[in-house]
Length: 221
Ligand code: AMP
View 1 (tube, rainbow, N blue to C red):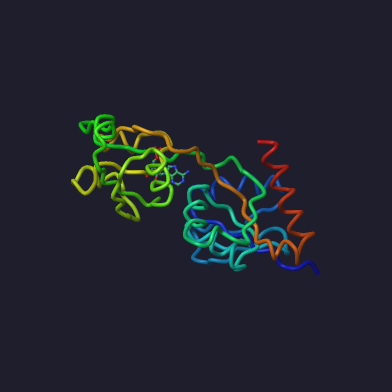
View 2: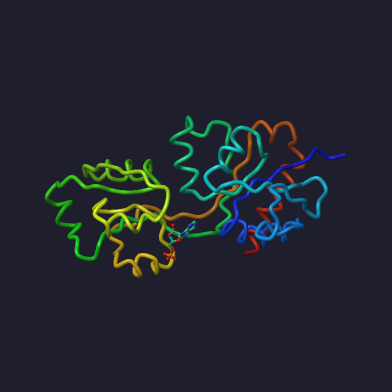
């Protein structure tokens, strides 16, 4: 019998956009995580199961072998690697080109960001992405005080908590609805397949088969 392969996914956008790729790869998830409370989901392939974890925990599960493979946003992957020793043991074979968005700097429409940067002002920046933000502003030579938040970043400039935020932007509708404007694009984001390197060695054939199937599915997209 084939060894069991475990794939870590998070609910929401990543799960929804990974499903068609899995299907194209011949793997159907047999339960809907939005309807079931189960955290381990069977698939149409007896040797492959899906575990549902928090988005920011996907790289952790894969790095430490709780899952053999996972799908995670580049944003999450960069933050994880900066916090966890460079993400040692995490192999990134594939850009899945799903859940695309960007990491941007946004401010209140009435805040003169360009002038603040020109004058060398110290900026208060609220974000969940402290490592990405720190590196970006350091490279620009802008002094910042970073305030770590876990959600609702858009609220920070509106309440006076921060001058700027660093957050994911897709359509820009959330910023617009909160009277914020995008003033810098830091990087483009998409979801990546990540693989535990030790698992790849131990279960090379079945894991390679899943990676190749994903690669074929992305190529078709
Ligand atoms: P939008 O209004 O389309 O610009 O989407 C922005 C909101 O959705 C922000 O709250 C983001 O944190 C979130 N968001 C956008 N794209 C993604 C993504 N690919 N993955 C996770 N969250 C996202």
